[in-house]
Image (cartoon, rainbow, N blue to C red; front, side, top):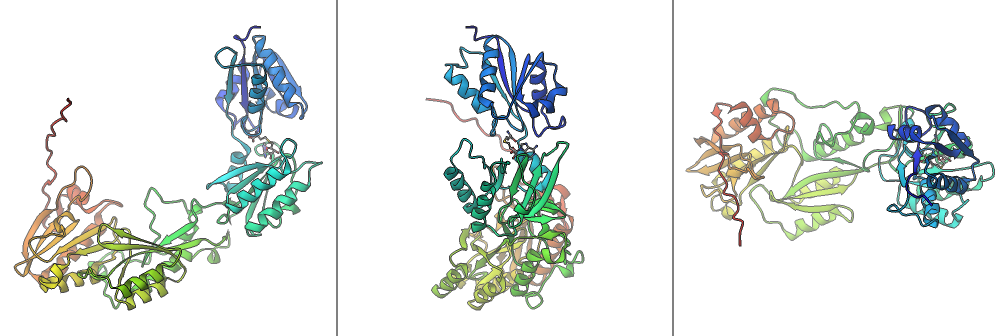
Length: 542
Ligand code: SAH
């Protein structure tokens, strides 16, 4: 037996049009002496091939197709066995291998076998519906031809329970009509009847038909052998006649945000982030007097309410959007005080209660707790925490003041200044996070000189440092820019520096980078604090 000359390609030709077939698939088809496949499929790709011989068989003759392919390859021919979509997804690839295994074929001694991947129905159909898959998903074939229904049932149950986006293949045929009804029943146990469902028949083929419906109503529409049924997860929604699954389940918000804080690399398109639609920024754009907020003007409770309304301002106002509920996660920072680092057991109790079963508390390197709580009532949480004298601050790209403990009061003269900075500038939104380190004496033991802005109280006046790079291999301290600043000058000066940075820095540009780029902040000139040091190579040795 000649096992060496021939080759089998198992080709997935995609949904069925010539635009969505891969180049490798076309090459394989064109190199083949034989094309073997189901009649309807062969017709779809016939115009692309020049094969001497086309063997088309009936739907149920899959095994004989695989056997025929093996026979022809053994005889030294190049053969393409074709599947729609991907040949490895309910396609011919596995079957071809099963037949070859029976014959004792191995890669080393036998003819070559190449599986050529194609766009599977879950992907082609999803692209027509919008972006329904996006998150964790699965495919389930409802055909109980070769799989016991009890197994299929279990998989639907599991997928429903685990909130997978589900693509149902082989949902229904003339003979098999019960399965889709049972699948719907199972899924309705776990998912809202309003869950978006897309029915795509003959994607990218001549008779393409698309229906947008819901889990409750999907059976009122035509579903057949050529349909793929895509069922959304619990956060999938309709928008402008499209089905969209967001990339995540949670919508995070913090105090007083004018926009939900997604970093550029996380930022989603409008379609995927409908809560960002039509938002006014609500924020003062210029004039440094506007940057200074006073406690009376903006309470944390107001900020919390505003943040929530930003996060939830969605469906009601947009007629194109039908939204399932999404969990709102309120994120903020808490500390016992600007100078005070002691937390009482009563405060701990209140904090624990606010966090509840579902929230989390994380202690951060800048001496505060980061809290994440799923809630639509941020104001209740903020009120309770503030009543027990905890300071609640926004997180993200904002001004954050970190003061020393003033040796528990001994060096307390400057505490009021630290508190004033926190009240006036803390939480102001910036292009990037900005930490102000405030230390009550020249020891600067809370490492103010390693913060974006360092303030050190010395001889009843202030020293100012700007632009540390606190982390990374090229970390460096901040540059000393001024000594002996009069106390009444401190806050106006800081405000100007922060305002300048806010107005002129690029998004995501940290203060040290900004200082390095523009070479001057206010009237302070930049000096390179990161002079290059030659590093000795590590000794290699014994
Ligand atoms: N190998 C194929 C799946 C074969 S099972 C793939 O990867 O796509 C057959 C099922 O696939 C059909 O019952 C239907 O649910 C789905 N299907 C295949 N091609 C399709 C198309 N063009 N449009 C919609 N569904 C399709």
